[in-house]
Length: 281
Ligand code: NAP
Image 1 (cartoon, rainbow, N blue to C red):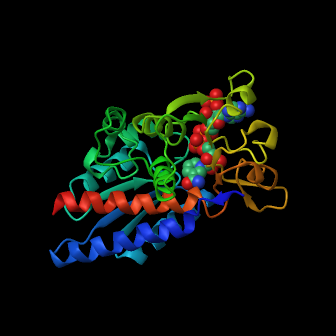
Image 2: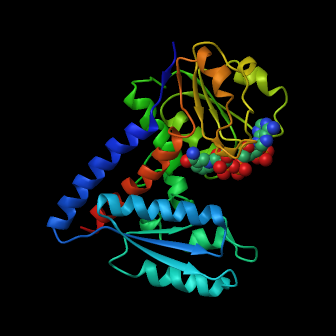
């Protein structure tokens, strides 16, 4: 019988601890502050930003939104980031991606001072993660590691197969697994005979973004399956990459969608913001 890796409950525990830390910081005169930048009118980005602001309010972090027009120039955006970099009341800066066409994400991410880069996308912070010595961890992979730790799933020596090589999920996920002494294989759209790899995985992480992508014949019996995907099925319902109904009975542990990785990603942003505020204190 498989066990659910319950992101909702684990995230609530993480948030409760963050809320305690916030109380302590406030007693010392420090209110953690997160600046959230959103450019343009992407509806999905709007939802993400609203959720992040709701999370902040729940744990006592002060979030300030900077909603910029779709037509904002690169210079205007960089100037805002520069201002926030120098604002002592701002501990974390988050620029919601994707940015509208014409704005260069790489330059924008690189402009955020690494000390306030709570998404952990800045090259300097990415380098620290590679070296296994870090202040911030990227939110989604960090949340996944916490889910595994909570259920005492030992990663060391296991074969972890990560599907996806984005800078946000796939690559840092592979790095955290490697830092935790897993043997790691990274697959992507050019991987030949993908199922040959996935069937060897003790831990399979799917970060592809295609509903129903991971089918039962791709999964090793008794393995752990982590579904990062956030997709809409034909009925418009939120679903992951994994054909949950048919894959779950094969697994030892599996994350559901919704209620798996998503809430952990949100919680880890709060963890990073409080870490930054502790440094200010
Ligand atoms: P992304 O940048 O689009 O990356 C998708 C990855 O999947 C790419 O590396 C791509 O390979 C690979 N891929 C696509 N088709 C494939 C195929 N047929 N076989 C093998 N690999 C294939 O997406 P992302 O930002 O990493 O996000 C992935 C998914 O996770 C999305 O659904 C996103 O919404 C979701 N997500 C969820 C959370 C959460 O908190 N739950 C957080 C972030 C993202 P190539 O590199 O070769 O193109």
